[in-house]
Length: 71
Image 1 (cartoon, rainbow, N blue to C red):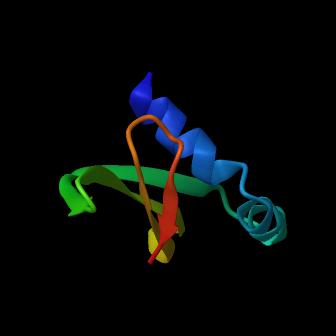
Image 2: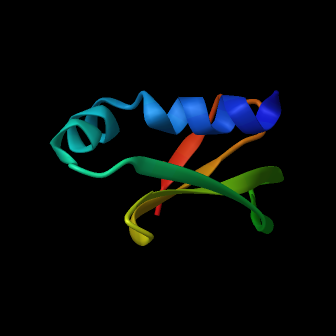
């Protein structure tokens, strides 16, 4: 469930929802657990929003989904 929570947290951000509606292709979200980051003693997972295999934006999300940091 934590992976789903991280993706859902990004997917429903207002700017992401607006961008996704503009796309003609499916938006894909990737959680990259091999690219975790540590900041202020907290672990952040890397979550990418992509269309047609091209990166649009990257975010860092805590496993509990409570903190999101855009790149």
